[in-house]
Picture 1 (spheres, rainbow, N blue to C red):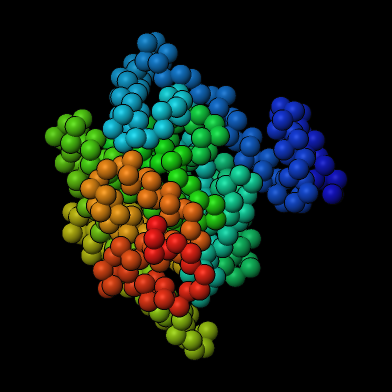
Picture 2 (picture 1 turned 180 degrees about the vertical axis):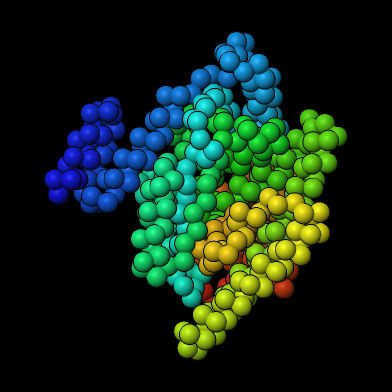
Length: 384
């Protein structure tokens, strides 16, 4: 280990408990780069935990902001709804609040090769391999993205309002999503708690698509039971835009996959890729006009949008239709739906894809369904 690594490690050990210091020493075996990454990750999260205050106390005596008590009372009602009506974990997650003084809690870096949609993976302790790397400091995320571009990758850096520690810690409600209003708080709380119900190592798309379907079902129920007419209308419009945007990106992911699988000279593929993304931007502009000029996705679809951006949004939406079909098959009974998803989680990754593909019409299942008969060693995929 280099002297710089020892300096990073030593400084972090001074700030952390014995238990966490021993964990970090184990991380040292993976090398200096990982020490620095884990140090910022663990340190960043403990900063959040130190800032958290119980929501009940803040509702009773909001300090500095007269609106805060009212907002947090709504959050508490959403949190109770999540466990009571959605069968999500009834624990201390999202029962505290922290203002961290910035617009995002972390910035995630996504990467994909110049002529491929094969997402770059990073493997981390406790959660396995994921298709992104998160940083509490935007400059650190941008620095990694620049290094990856030097290696020939397309990159996408996205600010994230919330994340889940999968029940290892009592995750707080953050100002990063409180500022977006009640609808966004409900959506995020439902989504992040779903990760505590089912989480599969090394399968980001499965985890995020499952949580998105739980989020959608939760929002459907919450708006029907709790939302004002204005909130209900806003949610319906938001959901329509989100679905249309997801379909647009899904269409272009399929086009990009076809292009990159077609072979041919790299220079020709680069020209075709440039034309493809130019067409995507034109189609997005037309879609935006149909929304009356709503600019919510402008920061995403810009001149620099690339393969990594297609990958990033595919993780949250690509398997959503199959999970939605499964929820429908279970007649929107969430405990039964969760049991079916846990059974899926026991399969191999390829078997999970095949089982989900079988829930969809052949045209919608696409390549996954076509590939299933030829995939060997899929125990239980037809019985789950």
